[in-house]
Length: 60
Length: 314
Image (tube, rainbow over all chains, first blue to last red):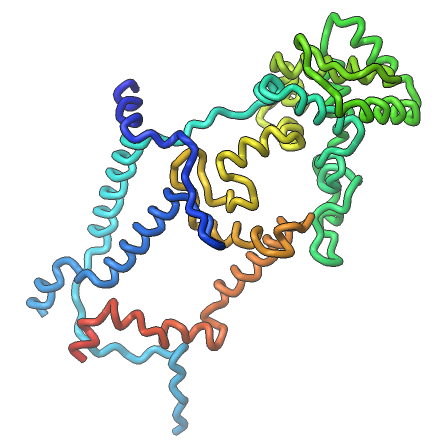
C-alpha cells in the first residue's frame, strides 16, 4: 500500500485540472491528451501494415 | 430471365480474391493482456481519483450560513427541490417536452415534503432537548397561516444572518419557533446526525442517498465545489473528472447539447437532451436502412486505405 502511494505520488493528479478555453472549445488538458492519443492510435491502425502480412503474402 | 439492378449500399458482390488464415482468439488474448498490463501500470503511476464524499456534516461545518439559509428555503418551500415538481412533489411543472408533461404523467414517485422531510422530521429524532421539543410542538399546533407568517418574518431578516459562537443568529423578529428549528438543525447537521437521520428514515437498508443529495444540491456549497472542479453543466462537466485526471470524453455529445440554446437555460433541459439523444441513437441504429447516410462509407472510401494492398493488387 505504501509502495502504491509512493508510486502514485510520482505524478500527482489530485490538484485542480487545467483547461483549454479557446472560443467554443473548453476541454481539460487530460481529456485533450486522451483524445489525441486515440486519434493517433486510429490513424496508426489505418496506416501501419498488418503484422505478419508479408509472411502470409508469401504463403499465398 | 429478369435481371435485378445492383444496389451498391445493400448488395455485396461475391468475393473472388484470396483468403488468409487469421487467429482472432490469439489477437484477442494479446489485446486483453496488453491492455490489462497498461491499466495496472498506469494506475500504479498515476493513482486514481479519491475525492472524499461530500456530506451534510462537511457542508454545515464549512459553510454554516449557507446550510442554515438552505434549511430555511426548505421550510418556506423556495428551494429547488421544494419547487421542482414530479417526481418529488406537485409544486412545479417538472420536466416536459413541449406540450408533453412527461414527468407529471409518470407522477410523484419519490414524494418529498421539504419542510417535513428535511427539517421537522429529523429534528423530532433529537432526544433530551426540551426547548426544541417545545418549539416542535408549537410548530405542529400552529395553523398553516401562522407558520407562513413565522417563516416569512424569519426570511425577511435572514439576509443579516450570522454564525456566532456555534449558533445561527438573526435579528429579533416574530418568527415563533423558527429560529430554534433552524439553529438546532444546524447543530444537528454539524455533528453528522442529520446525515444519519436522512438515511435511516428510508427503511432497513441505508443506501438511498436521495434526500441528503437533494438537500445538499439545494445549497450553493456543492455548486461552488463543482465549479472549482469544472463539473458544472455549463462547464461540459459530464466529460470531466476531479483533479487533473482524464474524464469521459466519449460523453462529449451528451454534454454538448447542454451548452446550446434552448437546453442551456431550459427547466426541462435534461428531458430535451434525452429526446435528442434518443433520436440520434435511432438514426445510428437504423443507419443501414437510411438512403444517403448509408452510402457515406462507400463514398468516403476509407476502406480502400485500410485494405490498400488488396486494392493495389486488383
